[in-house]
Image (tube, rainbow, N blue to C red):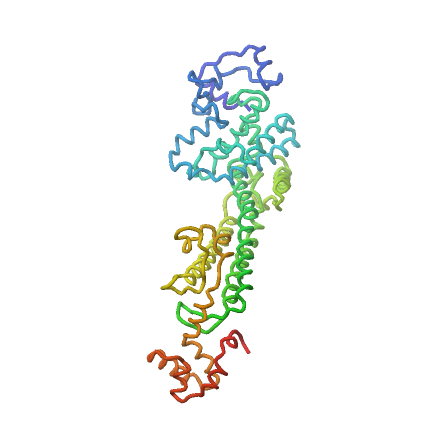
Length: 452
């Protein structure tokens, strides 16, 4: 428990703390303490804005108003990269809080002092609830295992628990960041576990609800536009008719498939590496620890987390996250396609297609809606006048004549009409291929919307 102090003893003179002082130390409650104490351990700096804490490399100044400790400070010194916008994402920190709480609860089952375990759980809950976000200054640029962030979390929970128990910040007494908060854990299994927890929570609380909301809004528009017939396009070139509702139904299906793909990737995300410790063997854990931690995390989140069946894979690879990322990448491509289509169909107001009227939210916002579902999709209107004009002027309606006069004659009608700037009907009659009555009977856009 006190290996940091033992290492410090090799390079710094120690003084024996009076027995009476040790017995009355805040938060110790008469518990056993080391026989030697570093001089002024975690002492306050003279200006009272910093306290002095130690790691195995020596002493460091830690801001008095922060719960993190020496290892976190050292990381800020070693990785002066990025800034506030590149800090470790809050969902990962909250996920760590959930994990540390679950681990403390399980460790209590295996003999951890209930007083210490309860303090850790309370502090971890505050982390999970986002109440201590200001105490996590580290950026994503750090070692690959995430050791610095794991220790940042351990230090914050340790010091907050110490404070709850009436102890001195930075003393590591009676709650040690390694021996207690990180008990039966390693950065190598906690960080992958936190990533999985964070990803699962974000998928269920943000991504899937957002996609469902978009799906429902597009579906409502598909039904609203079901009777509006328009000209279709392939590669922006005129094609045969379809309804605006059919066009929107394609977007609905894309979003539906996006949700299906994401859900299909989740079973591997629910598998947690916790309990694998440093290399996957589970060294320094108890039998059943991994399973119990996963069960606790599942209970805390309401998501079906389980322990990973193979901890070596869970630690050494992130294939599950790559798989989920792939599903999200496909989703992003779908959303880009949908947004670009709507932007294209709403182009104008005078020189573009202008088939859709997009909501006007602020100056210039008709081409830049700030929140796609709420501020764009739900307010889209069909410009039926423009839609009808473009459809009636399209040469592709000639396709309806193919079964009656053949491809060659239909193609000649279209090319001649395009060359002369005349309508299909006028050209067909002029070429003598059919009568006006036949044209009106055979060329009906509403009859061109599906197989017969």
